[in-house]
Length: 302
Image (cartoon, rainbow, N blue to C red; front, side):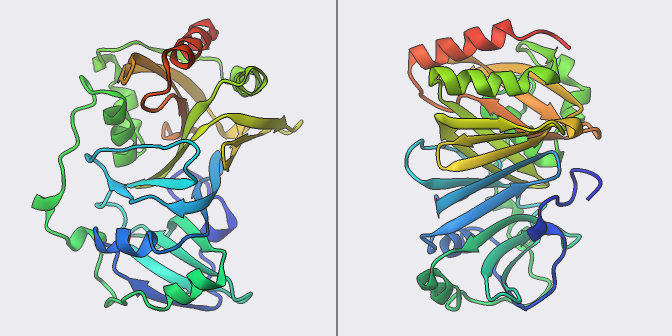
Protein backbone atom coordinates (compact mmCIF):
# COMPACT_ATOMS: atom_id res chain seq x y z
CA UNK A 1 0.00 0.00 0.00
CA UNK A 2 1.04 3.58 -0.42
CA UNK A 3 -0.49 5.08 2.72
CA UNK A 4 -1.56 4.05 6.19
CA UNK A 5 -5.18 3.52 5.16
CA UNK A 6 -4.55 0.08 3.75
CA UNK A 7 -2.15 -2.73 4.45
CA UNK A 8 1.54 -3.31 4.45
CA UNK A 9 2.07 -6.95 5.29
CA UNK A 10 1.38 -9.96 3.09
CA UNK A 11 -1.88 -10.94 4.73
CA UNK A 12 -3.32 -7.52 3.93
CA UNK A 13 -2.66 -7.33 0.24
CA UNK A 14 -5.95 -8.75 -0.86
CA UNK A 15 -5.00 -12.40 -1.35
CA UNK A 16 -8.03 -14.22 -2.68
CA UNK A 17 -6.57 -17.72 -2.87
CA UNK A 18 -8.27 -20.56 -1.07
CA UNK A 19 -11.73 -20.25 0.49
CA UNK A 20 -13.36 -17.75 2.81
CA UNK A 21 -16.64 -17.29 4.64
CA UNK A 22 -18.14 -14.36 6.49
CA UNK A 23 -18.62 -14.47 10.25
CA UNK A 24 -20.49 -11.97 12.41
CA UNK A 25 -18.35 -8.80 12.82
CA UNK A 26 -20.59 -7.27 15.48
CA UNK A 27 -19.80 -7.14 19.16
CA UNK A 28 -20.18 -9.19 21.28
CA UNK A 29 -20.47 -11.93 18.65
CA UNK A 30 -17.05 -11.17 17.17
CA UNK A 31 -15.47 -11.16 20.63
CA UNK A 32 -16.91 -14.61 21.36
CA UNK A 33 -15.44 -15.96 18.14
CA UNK A 34 -11.97 -14.49 18.68
CA UNK A 35 -11.64 -15.61 22.30
CA UNK A 36 -12.33 -19.22 21.30
CA UNK A 37 -8.90 -19.49 19.73
CA UNK A 38 -5.96 -20.33 22.00
CA UNK A 39 -2.94 -20.25 19.67
CA UNK A 40 -2.94 -17.25 17.36
CA UNK A 41 -0.38 -15.16 15.52
CA UNK A 42 -1.97 -11.70 15.47
CA UNK A 43 -0.80 -9.01 13.05
CA UNK A 44 -1.76 -5.35 12.87
CA UNK A 45 -0.07 -2.49 11.03
CA UNK A 46 1.05 -1.08 7.74
CA UNK A 47 4.26 -0.23 5.89
CA UNK A 48 5.61 2.08 8.60
CA UNK A 49 4.83 -0.05 11.68
CA UNK A 50 3.73 -3.59 12.35
CA UNK A 51 3.07 -5.63 15.50
CA UNK A 52 3.25 -9.42 15.27
CA UNK A 53 2.21 -11.21 18.46
CA UNK A 54 1.68 -14.82 19.48
CA UNK A 55 -0.89 -15.75 22.10
CA UNK A 56 -4.64 -15.85 22.59
CA UNK A 57 -7.12 -13.00 22.34
CA UNK A 58 -8.27 -11.13 25.39
CA UNK A 59 -11.84 -9.89 24.98
CA UNK A 60 -11.54 -7.16 22.32
CA UNK A 61 -12.76 -3.72 23.31
CA UNK A 62 -14.51 -0.98 21.37
CA UNK A 63 -13.51 2.66 21.21
CA UNK A 64 -14.93 4.36 24.32
CA UNK A 65 -14.80 1.25 26.52
CA UNK A 66 -12.28 0.40 29.22
CA UNK A 67 -9.00 -1.02 27.96
CA UNK A 68 -6.24 -3.05 29.62
CA UNK A 69 -2.90 -4.43 28.49
CA UNK A 70 -1.72 -7.21 30.80
CA UNK A 71 2.04 -7.83 30.63
CA UNK A 72 3.07 -11.46 30.86
CA UNK A 73 -0.45 -12.80 30.31
CA UNK A 74 0.11 -13.92 26.72
CA UNK A 75 -3.10 -12.08 25.82
CA UNK A 76 -3.55 -10.21 22.56
CA UNK A 77 -5.10 -6.82 23.32
CA UNK A 78 -7.20 -5.66 20.38
CA UNK A 79 -9.27 -2.46 20.25
CA UNK A 80 -11.65 -1.63 17.42
CA UNK A 81 -13.71 1.19 16.01
CA UNK A 82 -16.97 -0.52 15.04
CA UNK A 83 -17.76 2.19 12.49
CA UNK A 84 -14.69 1.25 10.45
CA UNK A 85 -14.58 -2.54 10.76
CA UNK A 86 -17.17 -3.70 8.27
CA UNK A 87 -16.70 -7.46 7.97
CA UNK A 88 -14.94 -10.46 9.47
CA UNK A 89 -13.77 -13.37 7.33
CA UNK A 90 -12.51 -16.85 8.11
CA UNK A 91 -10.12 -17.58 5.27
CA UNK A 92 -8.20 -20.70 4.22
CA UNK A 93 -5.39 -20.03 1.77
CA UNK A 94 -3.75 -22.26 -0.83
CA UNK A 95 -1.32 -23.60 1.80
CA UNK A 96 -4.30 -24.65 3.98
CA UNK A 97 -3.51 -21.99 6.60
CA UNK A 98 -6.58 -20.57 8.34
CA UNK A 99 -6.89 -17.01 9.56
CA UNK A 100 -9.47 -14.55 10.87
CA UNK A 101 -9.35 -11.26 8.97
CA UNK A 102 -11.12 -8.04 9.91
CA UNK A 103 -11.93 -5.91 6.87
CA UNK A 104 -12.76 -2.26 6.39
CA UNK A 105 -15.45 -1.01 4.02
CA UNK A 106 -13.04 -1.12 1.09
CA UNK A 107 -12.34 -4.80 1.71
CA UNK A 108 -8.83 -4.19 3.05
CA UNK A 109 -7.58 -6.31 5.94
CA UNK A 110 -6.93 -4.19 9.02
CA UNK A 111 -6.14 -7.09 11.37
CA UNK A 112 -5.32 -10.75 10.88
CA UNK A 113 -5.19 -13.60 13.37
CA UNK A 114 -3.54 -16.71 11.96
CA UNK A 115 -4.74 -19.88 13.69
CA UNK A 116 -1.69 -21.93 14.61
CA UNK A 117 -3.17 -25.12 16.07
CA UNK A 118 -5.31 -27.82 14.51
CA UNK A 119 -7.75 -27.45 17.43
CA UNK A 120 -8.27 -23.77 16.63
CA UNK A 121 -8.76 -24.55 12.96
CA UNK A 122 -11.42 -27.08 13.89
CA UNK A 123 -13.10 -24.53 16.17
CA UNK A 124 -13.12 -22.04 13.31
CA UNK A 125 -15.43 -24.38 11.45
CA UNK A 126 -18.03 -23.94 14.21
CA UNK A 127 -18.28 -20.15 13.88
CA UNK A 128 -21.68 -18.94 12.70
CA UNK A 129 -21.77 -17.52 9.20
CA UNK A 130 -23.67 -14.37 8.26
CA UNK A 131 -25.08 -12.98 5.06
CA UNK A 132 -22.97 -10.66 2.95
CA UNK A 133 -23.66 -7.03 3.80
CA UNK A 134 -23.95 -7.57 7.54
CA UNK A 135 -21.31 -5.21 8.94
CA UNK A 136 -20.17 -4.24 12.39
CA UNK A 137 -21.94 -0.93 11.84
CA UNK A 138 -25.26 -2.77 11.65
CA UNK A 139 -25.41 -2.93 15.44
CA UNK A 140 -27.58 -0.38 17.23
CA UNK A 141 -25.45 2.73 17.61
CA UNK A 142 -27.12 3.47 20.96
CA UNK A 143 -25.30 0.44 22.40
CA UNK A 144 -21.88 1.87 21.64
CA UNK A 145 -20.04 3.79 24.35
CA UNK A 146 -19.20 7.37 23.54
CA UNK A 147 -15.48 8.08 23.40
CA UNK A 148 -14.45 10.99 25.64
CA UNK A 149 -13.07 14.19 24.16
CA UNK A 150 -9.31 14.03 23.67
CA UNK A 151 -8.74 17.75 24.37
CA UNK A 152 -9.18 17.22 28.10
CA UNK A 153 -9.00 13.45 28.04
CA UNK A 154 -6.63 10.91 29.50
CA UNK A 155 -4.18 8.63 27.74
CA UNK A 156 -6.94 6.31 26.53
CA UNK A 157 -8.86 9.24 25.05
CA UNK A 158 -5.76 10.10 23.00
CA UNK A 159 -5.51 6.52 21.72
CA UNK A 160 -9.19 6.47 20.84
CA UNK A 161 -8.87 9.73 18.90
CA UNK A 162 -6.13 8.06 16.84
CA UNK A 163 -8.25 4.94 16.39
CA UNK A 164 -11.16 6.98 15.04
CA UNK A 165 -9.44 8.41 11.95
CA UNK A 166 -5.73 7.80 12.19
CA UNK A 167 -5.33 10.86 14.39
CA UNK A 168 -4.74 13.34 11.57
CA UNK A 169 -7.56 15.67 12.71
CA UNK A 170 -6.30 15.54 16.30
CA UNK A 171 -2.74 16.24 15.21
CA UNK A 172 -3.87 19.33 13.28
CA UNK A 173 -5.61 20.65 16.40
CA UNK A 174 -3.19 19.41 19.05
CA UNK A 175 -2.77 22.94 20.40
CA UNK A 176 -6.17 22.35 22.06
CA UNK A 177 -4.70 19.52 24.14
CA UNK A 178 -4.25 20.66 27.74
CA UNK A 179 -1.20 18.47 28.31
CA UNK A 180 2.38 18.81 27.08
CA UNK A 181 3.13 18.07 23.45
CA UNK A 182 6.26 18.63 21.42
CA UNK A 183 8.05 17.28 18.38
CA UNK A 184 10.87 14.76 18.91
CA UNK A 185 13.66 13.83 16.52
CA UNK A 186 12.64 10.60 14.73
CA UNK A 187 16.29 9.56 14.49
CA UNK A 188 16.44 8.85 18.25
CA UNK A 189 13.85 6.05 18.13
CA UNK A 190 16.38 3.22 17.63
CA UNK A 191 18.39 4.58 20.56
CA UNK A 192 15.26 4.73 22.73
CA UNK A 193 14.56 1.05 22.05
CA UNK A 194 18.20 0.11 22.58
CA UNK A 195 18.23 1.99 25.89
CA UNK A 196 15.08 0.46 27.36
CA UNK A 197 16.39 -2.95 26.29
CA UNK A 198 19.79 -2.45 27.93
CA UNK A 199 18.45 -1.14 31.26
CA UNK A 200 15.51 -3.53 31.46
CA UNK A 201 12.82 -0.82 31.34
CA UNK A 202 9.49 -2.32 30.19
CA UNK A 203 7.40 -0.34 27.73
CA UNK A 204 3.97 -0.42 26.16
CA UNK A 205 3.50 -0.48 22.39
CA UNK A 206 0.36 0.17 20.35
CA UNK A 207 0.26 -0.20 16.56
CA UNK A 208 -2.58 1.11 14.45
CA UNK A 209 -4.29 0.13 11.23
CA UNK A 210 -7.51 1.81 10.08
CA UNK A 211 -10.11 1.24 12.85
CA UNK A 212 -7.91 -1.31 14.66
CA UNK A 213 -5.28 -1.07 17.38
CA UNK A 214 -3.18 -3.92 18.79
CA UNK A 215 -1.15 -3.36 21.95
CA UNK A 216 1.36 -5.20 24.12
CA UNK A 217 3.58 -4.38 27.09
CA UNK A 218 6.63 -5.79 28.78
CA UNK A 219 10.41 -5.88 28.67
CA UNK A 220 12.30 -5.37 25.42
CA UNK A 221 14.35 -8.55 25.00
CA UNK A 222 16.36 -7.66 21.90
CA UNK A 223 16.62 -4.91 19.30
CA UNK A 224 18.10 -4.69 15.83
CA UNK A 225 18.22 -2.20 12.99
CA UNK A 226 19.41 -2.33 9.41
CA UNK A 227 21.31 0.15 7.25
CA UNK A 228 18.08 0.69 5.30
CA UNK A 229 16.25 2.00 8.35
CA UNK A 230 14.33 -1.07 9.50
CA UNK A 231 14.09 -1.25 13.28
CA UNK A 232 13.09 -4.38 15.17
CA UNK A 233 12.30 -4.96 18.83
CA UNK A 234 11.09 -8.05 20.66
CA UNK A 235 8.64 -6.71 23.25
CA UNK A 236 7.30 -9.33 25.67
CA UNK A 237 5.74 -11.98 23.39
CA UNK A 238 5.47 -9.65 20.39
CA UNK A 239 7.68 -8.37 17.61
CA UNK A 240 7.63 -4.68 16.68
CA UNK A 241 8.89 -3.62 13.27
CA UNK A 242 9.36 0.01 12.24
CA UNK A 243 10.39 1.40 8.87
CA UNK A 244 12.05 4.65 9.94
CA UNK A 245 12.14 6.21 6.45
CA UNK A 246 8.33 5.88 6.43
CA UNK A 247 8.01 7.54 9.86
CA UNK A 248 7.64 11.21 8.96
CA UNK A 249 7.47 12.68 12.46
CA UNK A 250 7.42 11.83 16.16
CA UNK A 251 5.58 13.72 18.89
CA UNK A 252 5.81 13.43 22.64
CA UNK A 253 2.33 13.84 24.12
CA UNK A 254 1.66 13.79 27.87
CA UNK A 255 -1.79 12.96 29.20
CA UNK A 256 -3.22 11.78 32.54
CA UNK A 257 -2.83 8.06 33.25
CA UNK A 258 -2.59 5.72 36.24
CA UNK A 259 0.52 7.43 37.68
CA UNK A 260 -0.36 10.96 36.66
CA UNK A 261 0.86 12.69 33.47
CA UNK A 262 2.42 10.03 31.26
CA UNK A 263 4.47 10.53 28.10
CA UNK A 264 3.70 8.80 24.83
CA UNK A 265 5.85 8.85 21.72
CA UNK A 266 3.50 9.01 18.75
CA UNK A 267 4.92 8.05 15.35
CA UNK A 268 3.24 9.56 12.28
CA UNK A 269 3.51 8.64 8.62
CA UNK A 270 3.74 11.10 5.74
CA UNK A 271 -0.06 11.52 5.71
CA UNK A 272 -0.14 12.64 9.34
CA UNK A 273 -1.68 9.37 10.53
CA UNK A 274 -0.32 7.89 13.75
CA UNK A 275 1.03 4.40 13.08
CA UNK A 276 2.48 3.49 16.49
CA UNK A 277 2.74 4.68 20.09
CA UNK A 278 5.43 3.91 22.67
CA UNK A 279 4.35 4.58 26.26
CA UNK A 280 3.51 3.05 29.65
CA UNK A 281 0.07 1.46 30.03
CA UNK A 282 -1.78 1.26 33.32
CA UNK A 283 -0.13 0.59 36.68
CA UNK A 284 3.55 -0.21 36.12
CA UNK A 285 5.18 0.88 39.39
CA UNK A 286 6.47 4.29 40.34
CA UNK A 287 10.11 3.49 39.53
CA UNK A 288 9.28 2.30 36.03
CA UNK A 289 7.05 5.30 35.42
CA UNK A 290 9.69 7.69 36.75
CA UNK A 291 12.43 6.14 34.61
CA UNK A 292 10.24 6.39 31.51
CA UNK A 293 9.42 10.03 32.20
CA UNK A 294 13.09 10.83 32.77
CA UNK A 295 13.93 9.23 29.41
CA UNK A 296 11.12 11.07 27.62
CA UNK A 297 12.22 14.43 29.07
CA UNK A 298 15.74 13.88 27.77
CA UNK A 299 14.74 13.36 24.14
CA UNK A 300 15.87 16.08 21.72
CA UNK A 301 13.37 18.11 19.78
CA UNK A 302 12.91 17.76 16.05
